Image 1 (spheres, rainbow, N blue to C red):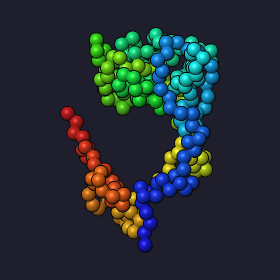
Image 2: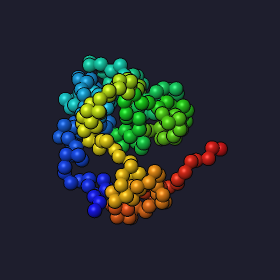
Image 3: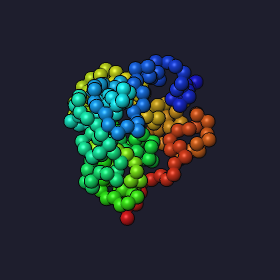
Image 4: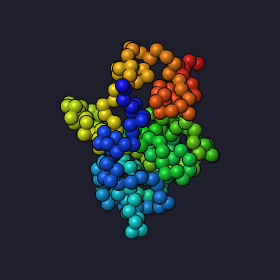
Length: 228
């Protein structure tokens, strides 16, 4: 008799899927402030980049720390390293991070350590960004972003060396590790088990039960994209 799939076992509360959310510092987003001072730079469990504690008007908020940011630095709404401002106020060719997808959403793009996008062109209402994936994205000029690159850009240069170190790093992030491929399992444990590659169609509907919801779940498209 087989056992439940990963999708069916999640949420049971056992240590394998438990996330230490009580150690997380909360969401990082922009607040309607015009100026502030960096009072501390802290390590944030559950993230792969440090956070900057910015104090403004007696209230403290957390921002993603950028490379070169230091305690005592003044944060304002104008153009400058580490400052938060609208895309319309940023010169072309500047590297930016923690970019809003829609004005006022608090930042959604380029939030991982060492990542940034480049402002390519802009007009009165729209701005074109070059993303880390080399794709271009058009956003509103009213979207806000942080000038600079997310700190801790050299994180991936240090190898884990030992499996135990990688295990504890994944547990701190609330990630399931290690991840076993379905084709590496037995046929009773996974729909793709008992074969070297999926011998059936991987596309399934999003309305299927958890035991059948494996592979490409309701994809918009599959296969390699033809280059123009």
